[in-house]
Length: 337
Image (cartoon, rainbow, N blue to C red; front, side, top):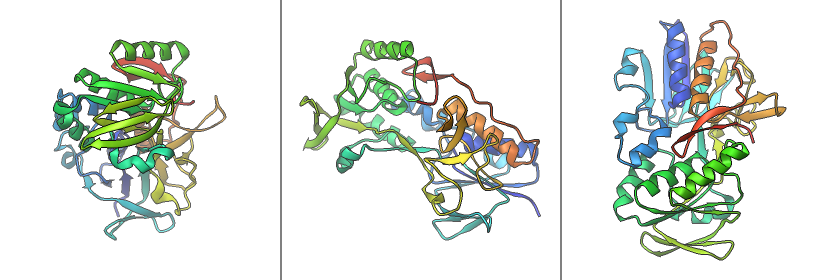
């Protein structure tokens, strides 16, 4: 019987793993399960879609015919609801089950709305998917002002593309750390200058207190300081959370994400995790941490894929600093706080 590999998540980590497995195992079955309906794309390129510089087909991870050529079974629009470790099955929301000899969890992360702002969720825009990017792009002609709350990649990238599109942008950060992963002090100050030079109003040490819809598509945002901002788009991020809720009762050890060893294997043999949903031990800080970013996800997926396929087990080398494209420039950041 052919070996069966299942990959949950069709982001950079998942596709990198599938390619690595196929390079080792020419005859195996590889199934990629993806909740979204679009073909796998680079989420880091969503800003270019908002700007109109690239269309959806130009940010694909691989060409449309790649999956057939590589004999990969791509299951779009399918959601995994649970995993049976002992039975070696993945269960889908349509009651179907998929058998696996080895499993990779590469489900990435989701933006989290701050707890005190969840009641305003219907008024908040999101910027995590291609659908989000297209919606913002289509709203640009009538969008005059936006308020963004957060300090991560999504908030900074959305600020960059909106101000480039002629939108008046206010960026609110509850503290003076402007990026996550963490920037050294000099890079943090450089980023602060880039933001201000772009014409963005940067408000540090404050937070959103209330969001009120004045008219359809027009909001009044009150900050804790009492300042009020009128705008047509409100974005609020409280960080991220790995997408691993479907593993809650599986027996796989979870912290925030899936705890993995240096080989990207979880506490259960044959079950691996890679990308923004995996927590890896970092000796410099003496604890597990989610290793963020596209380059990290690609490397982890490659290593996990080779290890799943049974090639000589390869350890993941942890880098202390890595370049990230932040606000249009390459800045060096560490991935732990």
